[in-house]
Length: 419
Image (cartoon, rainbow, N blue to C red; front, side):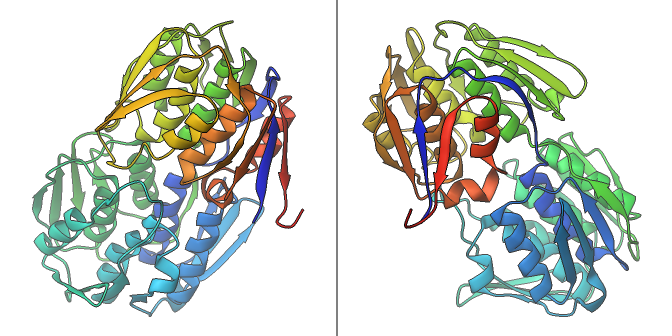
């Protein structure tokens, strides 16, 4: 199994380009199942999760070709209603095929999903909402079985904002009969990206990006093209890398408007952040200041940036309090950061981080996608050598992370399994 080896202590400087968003690309690719012809998607990141999605689309009968950050999906042969465990277990987002399969074929059998071990993330909100559209939902032998000749619009209020639930319902309701209103919907930029892709295909969706979304169902959707938005979490990770190392990094091809909460917190640490329409320049302070954060649904501080900020807090002056309100197991990276010398005390969903003058390199083990990124960031500032094992998690969500960091001056390399 590959590992990442980092010799810390180098200041990052230069320019890096943000890749397309994994979390936007996954539902947009799946939405092609609703079209009556081939759909083309550009700026798709070359990631393990994208390849898993392409494999799943092919299993369902669609043709999916991935080359040079472009994916073309032709759903002409889509006729298989089953997404099996062997494919779905690879990533949580596979549950997003449930809505499109049900809407197009009238029946679906989708394995309960797998993915990162950061919390239960139950799909009951997806299932309750699909039932409100008229679906007969059953859980049998580890599978969700759903059937309905044609879904019918309904007024649905989510108990809590759910990104996956909102995405599943957007796709299912696009072909439902009548109007569907989603209340307390998720507001993330990835929701807007999916609505834009569906509208380009002929859907009638308004209100995406707000708490209330209205979908006027249509009889059919047509082929369309879409460019995937920049990855705000990858962008945020490079922002923290610049702040950590006292660096000076320009990030191009990004969306500063999607990162306002992160920018605000970085500025409180003493980091200078300049923004343009599609770029940011981040200059780290000689010694960052500690800052308290609390993860919240968008537009609040993103849970996917919590682990990276914990590293910044670990080398900042003073103490920081980090509260995690989204996922119950999202502090599992703490034990590995402690191996590098971080002073972190966890109580329930709160971590108190006392800043240290330095971290010390050591062998560590990645436990999930964002935890992997936090260990890479810690390795950039740790004295000596840090070895990060089980880096396949990184390949799920970061396109050539080690190559991009090396281009900014980091001493970082990937060691292939057996190397």
